[in-house]
Length: 415
Image 1 (cartoon, one colour):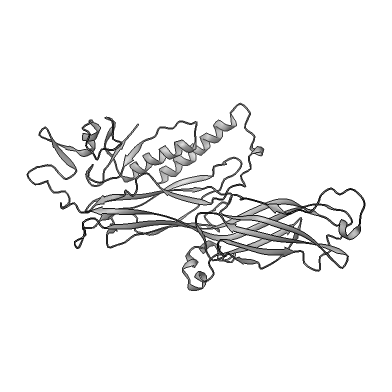
Image 2 (image 1 turned 120 degrees about the vertical axis):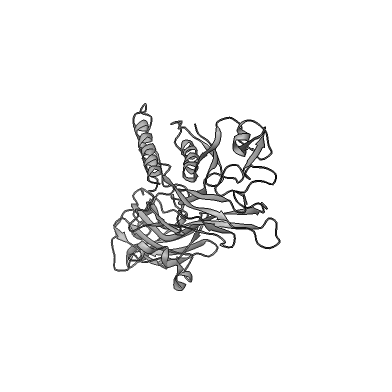
């Protein structure tokens, strides 16, 4: 696992070096990373887990995690939590693999130097498929993997502070008050609209911001936490009190150097949408000038987010005990008698025999040469290659399906 992380670091460093040594067309100031509606994303690596498994066989579980948003999880105050759930009636972790169903992770967000964000792989337990009980020939079950993480959306923009309605100033105005529309700020919860109003109070123009927010990501918003609770933001979601406060977002807003009072400070999302109104405190007279001008608006949304993926797995009754020869043959269940020789089904496919289960196994480079971690690394290398073009990394492929190789080995091609 440590070697995989080092590989990712080396690849990112190499990409940075190649970019900095380019012809000079790259300008990080031209890249706006505060766009989009993604945060921490998760996906299964290759065919892990496969959609079909045989009883009494093993399969690996591995995921690819990427932080495609702008906020970084530092691993200290802000931690991500990876978890998985399965039906113990059908599966069990094999000995020697991770038995914990929760893993903490840290992952930097995208930036001007890393506009695609950072990523890593997580190799979870290798599962053993239990023998099928009862009369069902091919039962189905789902396997779930989730990531929970505290996150922040930041919006920075200029708004017009227009005092002309109060002062009747005849001079040409530098700006006019207008509403702001947005699509995303590089996070799953987005500010979508800010309605700017100027209200005259005791000969002072008081700005008022109606801030509308929306969950635009693929996951759900959980319960907010206090600053002291941040290191355990995800663990605390199991508490009954926290579950009653799901779909809530904390809002903080500033105009220039002045903090605004927002009501409510914690917004309840209904149908993934909500709003709050933020105004300058009544005892603040900073905006009583006689001119109109631009002021910097900063809005922070703080929340805990959950994203999940799942895959339905069909369990096929093999009718064969593990590692036992086929009736009338000395070959194991992952082998076929070929000209009097027991050959693994993976090797037979590589020879071009053309069985229906061969699929993408098409040349002599395939073989039962990978264990679970090596196989996951092969598939990950292919994913990284797509992300870091034009580095043209060597890549590989793996098939996690059963019946191709002996237990603990997987059919793969190494290049």
